[in-house]
Amino acid sequence: MIVLKTEPEIARMREAGKILAALLTELAGMVQPGITTRDLEEVADRRIREAGAVATFKGQPGMVAYAPPYPAATCISVNEQVIHGIPSDRVLKDGDLVSIDCGVTLRGWIADAAISVIAGHARADVVRLLDTTRRSLMAAIEVATVGRRLGDVSFAVQQQAMAEGFGVVRDFCGHGVGKTLHEDPPIPNYGTPATGPVLRSGMTLAIEPMITLGSPQVKVKRDGWTVVTSDGKPAAHFEHTILVTDGAAEILTPWVL
Ligand code: MG
Ligand code: MG
Image (cartoon, rainbow, N blue to C red):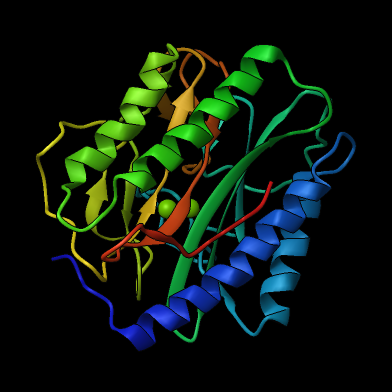
């Protein structure tokens, strides 16, 4: 069941989204060769606490039975890691592609967003991957208006990514978000136009293209969390939580890169 949010609920999600957007903007500015992914995590954890909010991801149950509850406020995925990378002592190197995903819960309401940035100097093909992934997210948001269908949103992502010859990850997808992190509907990054649920005002959706430079096949590492590309080639991930309105969709997590 897709839950429509009331005005007071939306106001809280908007506030959570502002905290998250400011945080991701700050973290993007920190990414450079020589820092560790844990340095980013520590800032995220501190900023969320300072804002009187809760790190949504901490304690999330794993998707495989043997995975421990998620141990951090952020997921930081480097190069061939697509999503769910766990912050560690890993030192970022020049040219690393760094995807940062984070969730903020404020007074019970959640915002979820992600960005991808490059540490230092980027390869041209990786820059194009990032640009395309980000554009695919914006294309999806553009069609997320009342009366359109979810398949239109999914197709918008797929179309942008495939036009550039990139891979669209199929094993993971976006989702509704609100009082819980993952609500209906699932939002695949591929689909058929004019199919699926009709979008209605008050829906809050986390749209999150995961796009690969090579094959879209992925696998989960032995830690039970980290998702990597099967061919070891880089992947990018961008995400916004949006609100469907009678006009253009409102981006609740307006990070700035
Ligand atoms: Mg996320
Ligand atoms: Mg999400």
